[in-house]
Length: 402
Image (tube, rainbow, N blue to C red; front, side, top):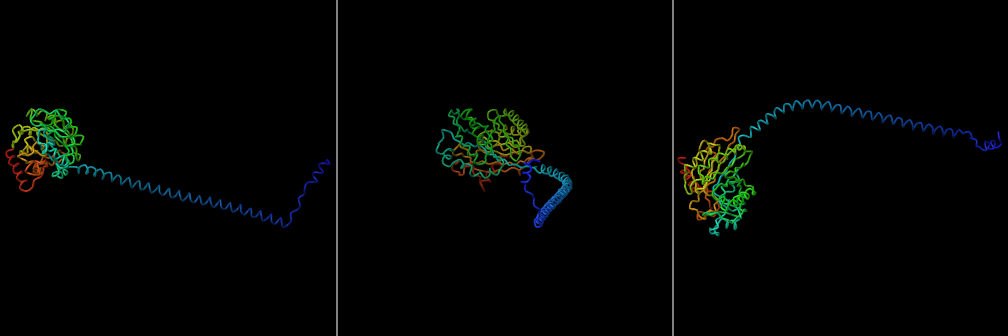
């Protein structure tokens, strides 16, 4: 061995023997370390056991719910099967319960919401419009019209700014804003087939149609028919102008009724502009056309133009009111006969169609075209007491022999 190695070896420190005290301390440390390790192992085992218990409980709960759900599902399926049968029966019952359906339609005569340029403008309908506003005119009948399902007027005149007047004795027009008179009082439809619909030329007619339609009012007349739907019932509307061709208009009448049937109309109402002015009884042409209309499928026939009331006829289970007279009429500042009416008809629709009308379905509301007897203030007003009965008596008289 070299001298250098000998030196290095001699320079290393030698371990001294542990004393008894040091040995005791060392034993205690080792024992403490073992206890800690044992406690940790026990805690880990306990934690594992706890997790296993939790897993078991959760699994048991889930399994129990699944079993209950299966049972409930079975019960529900049984219930649904029973309920399906009940619901089917209920559905059928509900569909059956929709019938019968009853609708009420109010019809009124000539409404000329304007004036002739040659009239005294200070007493004209527009003068009242300017001073009292659009809601003035129907104020006394508004509540009646609000209660029905459809209110129809014969709109006799034009709403236009055209100035080229037709060459005729009377020509009526007003500003298009006069539609507010109707819309503010629950009037939903207007017939335009009459002898004043073109008073300022063809454009005045189209202007009027557009103004009414833009205001939400259903228009009809001549070859144009309309369907108004309420309570799921389709009401077919057609207006026939008889004065030019008389019974020659029957072809258009038949075509229009057929068209409304094709469109699915449940109820068909025909308006005729016909007859002779100031005549209280219908002529043979009126009677013939009215009967034809009903034979072709009309459920109600309404007439106007004579400017006075005419009789009412029941024909084959359907009513014909031959003339309703004037209503809100700007064509005369003081008519000698101011009697008018609101003719109401209630229709009952069943699974088999429209039931035949009876006297109980008809309601005649006697009115005067003015709220006063001294002049025409363009405010149609229901009559009461003796005045109302007098109008009803007249209608009954005019209906004799029909």
